[in-house]
Amino acid sequence: MARMAVDITDDEFEELVAEALDSIPTDFWDRVDNLVVLIEPEPPESDPELLGLYDGIPLSERDSSYGAVLPDRVLIFRGPLRRMAFDKADLAEQVAITVVHEIGHFFGFEDDDLDELGWG
Image (cartoon, rainbow, N blue to C red):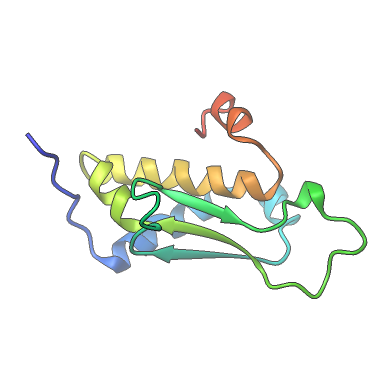
C-alpha cells in the first residue's frame, strides 16, 4: 500500500521549520553568519528523494578572504518530507532532523559525523 503525503498547509510546514530552527542552541546561532534557510516545494529532478541541501562554504573552511559573497543556503524540500512521514508528529521529527543536519553542514560536519550524533 502506497503511503499518502501528510496533509499540511505551507504555513504549517513553515512553522515546523521555524520550530526546528528555534531548537538549535543560541551558542550555535551566535556563530552563524551569512546563511539563509529556504523552503522549496521539491528537490532537483536529479535527486527526487532529497530532503534538504546545504549550499555554501562551511564555516570551518572560511578564512580571511571570505567576504562579499551571497549567503549560504539551507534548502528544505517540503514534498519528499511530506511523502516520507507517517503522520504530522513524524513529519515534525523528520523536519527537525533535516534542518539540524543541514545546519550541521554549515558548521563543517560531514554526513558520518551527523549520523553519529543522531542527526542523519
